[in-house]
Image (cartoon, rainbow, N blue to C red):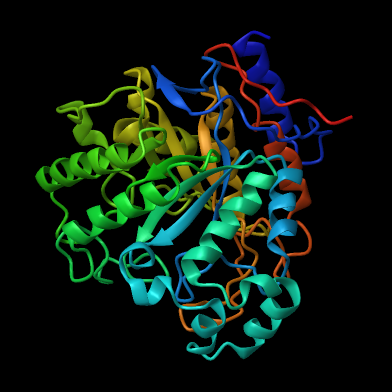
Length: 407
């Protein structure tokens, strides 16, 4: 199918929530390991592999994947596959890899120290084998559960200290901040890369989420991102190395003047974030088309230009209020999905989790951006799942890799 006609078909599906959806593709792993060819991610057989991912948080205070008190980990992995996603961007805090006390803490103790006895009881019912397991092994088990459903995993270093991301003043924002020691960060990246060196479905590592704060510095960005990329590649040459930008991962414009200098090729990917609240424009009260055009121009200047220069760009976070009642978010979503269809972007939606053990001091916090409901049992917005199914398989680029369709 020609790209133009494919875009016309997909755009029709995306703009009409009630339209009959394309059937979700069943998930199967592509030929691994992955690499890059111009702006595309490709498999070992040279065919394009589209990253159609969901973010799954595992970096908050308990330092464990959210939802283990709600559903069996295998059931959650199965739900990811059933919704048509081929990939999970699994977050982790640096201390999980560098602090032996935290890494060896049993999941039960991690929850109990935070006063979450109900969550302990929930894990005992839904994931009893994980309850006394050290946190680093719980993380491994989540990756393994995803592997059992042929789901690729991108490991995302979200924070140094376990907790909600992100604030400009949380001490985790930029190299040299209170909790962001570059040497410890490099040690953590190397350790995590080594842990999963022989884990086939771990296909990429994102070096740091949403760099931010008053200490941001382009010179230090180049210095440490290059060191981080080299550290990951030296420890695990199979994975894609994914670099985020500045200003909450909205800005990569400095790459126009200077490229990243690294010793390896065929593994480098950039990432950018795009939310309705992140790039200017009043989606609720201004003309929707005008705002969309303005924001796209901004996004292009800040990072989208990389595709035209032949670099892979992964929109590793986008998201919206899944209730469907937020007018501004609904308009932003239409704009994002239209661009994602036209340019056949790689992407990861925030977020899989329907609720958290604890977030910002609130127990059982409801995630309004969550694909799953508060209890993790159903899709929060089934009509969105139907819309996003249209964007989960590639239709541009190298000879494409497309999963077999379910009957």
